[in-house]
Image (cartoon, rainbow over all chains, first blue to last red; front, side, top):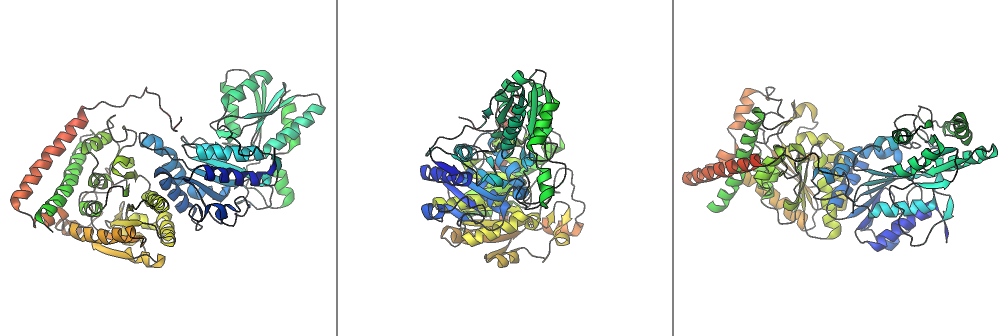
Length: 319
Length: 312
C-alpha cells in the first residue's frame, strides 16, 4: 500500500472522484495553483478550468453558487481556505444547503462538499487557527467530517463527494504533512462510523483530527502506569457514531473527550451527553482549549492546545 | 402586441392579485398562520420577466415570492395549501410562505434571508454555464438586498465568469419599514452594475410591457453568452412589509400616486372591457376553486418518519 501525506491523500481523493463522476467540480481561492496548503496541485492540468475553478475572495458568493449548482445537478467541492472563514458562509450552509432536502419536501438534495483547513499550531493567530466545528455542529441536514489520518482524509472526502447531502470536511492544517498508508483507488470511508485506534478496558478516550494523536500519546503514558486506554477516532462529528461510543463506555465506564476547540458547545460536549444518555454509569471529563482566542506567541499557543499529559491526567482522575 | 398576448399578460397579473388579496383575507381571519409578504402592486415585474423565459430556465425568488411562483406556472391550489400548512402544499407544509420550492416549475426556491435568492440564482447560472444546457437563470430580489454581501459578491462573480443570469431588482422603495434612500447610497440601483462591468437597465416596474422588453433584452444577452444584466424595476408594494406592518410610514400622497399607477388598470386600459370582465370572472372562479381545494386537504401527519438528509 503506498504511503502518502494527508495533503496528497486529499488531492487523490478529489482526483479519483473527479475521474469517476464528470459532475464533480472544485471551486475555491487559488485552487488552480494548489491552494495555500498545496492540497490541490495538478488538478487543473488534469481536469481543466471548467472543473477546477479559481474564485474571487467572496466565500459567501461561491459557496452559495455551489449550493445552487448542486441543486441543478453538479457536485461541487468547495475549498474554504481557512476554517475561520466559514463564518462568511454560515448563511448559505445553514439557511440554504442544509435545509433544502427537508424544506423542499424532498424535491432535491444538495450534494455539496465544503473542505476547510482548521486547527492551531502554525502560529497563524486567532483568526487562522480555530477549529470551528461548534459553529455548525447540531445543524440538521449537515454532516461534519474530521479525518485524523491520510487514509481517512481521502476516504472520508470520497464519501463526502458521493453523499447526496451537504458535508463539511474539516482538515487539520498540522496534519497535511503526516504520512500514512493510503489505499490506491480505495473505497470511501463510511460516514457516521468511528474507528477504534487502540483497545483498552479502563478508560475511553475519544478525539478527532490532530487530537487523536494526542489521545494515543496519552494512552501510551497511561500504559506505563498499567492503565488501559481505549482510543476512539470519531472521524464523523455529525452524525456521531453512537454505537461505537456506547459500546466502549459501557465496558470502561470512564470517558475522556479531547477537543482542540473551546471548552463549551463543541463535539466533546456531545460525546459526553451521548455517553450519559446511553443509560450506563459514566464518569466523564473534557479536555479542550481554554475559553480564549487562539494566541499567537509560540509558548502561549502550545500551552492552549490539549496536551497528552493533560489527557492522561484527566483519565487518571477518573480512576 | 396582439390583444390575445396582452390578455394573457393581464390574466397572469390578475391571478397574482387575486391570490394575494385572498391570502391577505385569510391572514386577517387567522386561517393562515405566521406571517406573509404580499406583492400586490408588483405583479408586472414577476409576469413581465417570467413571460420571456423558456422551459428549463431557473428562477430564484424571495420571501415575497408568490408572484414569481404563479408567474412560473406554479399551481395556485398547491401554493394555497402550502400557506395553509397542508400536506398537499408544494413543500408538504414544511416550508410555508417564505420557503416555497417547486423544481417542476423551475423555481429553485423562495429564500427567506434577504439576498439568498441572488446566491441561489448565481449557482443555477453557474450550473447552466458548466453543463452547457443553454438555460438562463433569474434572481429576483428587492432594493433591500442590494446592500447585502450576496449582491456585490455575486455580481462580481457573475461578471468575471460571464454567467447567464438576469439580476432583477424589484425596487419597491422600501426595505422592510425603511425608505430606500435613508439606507442606500447613491440613490439609484442600476448604476451599481457599472462598477462590475455589467450592463444595466432601469425600467418602469409597473408597466408589464416595459418590464417584458427589458427582461427580453437581458435574457437574450444571457442566452447568447453575453453574461449577466442588472434589471432595476421601479415598483411599489400596495401593502406593508409583512403581516404586522400596515405601512403607515409611507406618505399618503406617495401611496396614492403609486396606486394610480397600478399595473393592472394600466394594462386593462389597452384591453376590450368585455375581455377584462371575462378574465376577472374566470380568475375569481379559479382562485376560489384553488382555495377550496387547498382547504379540503389534510394537514401533514407529524408522526410520519422523516429525515433531514437524503439516504439511500
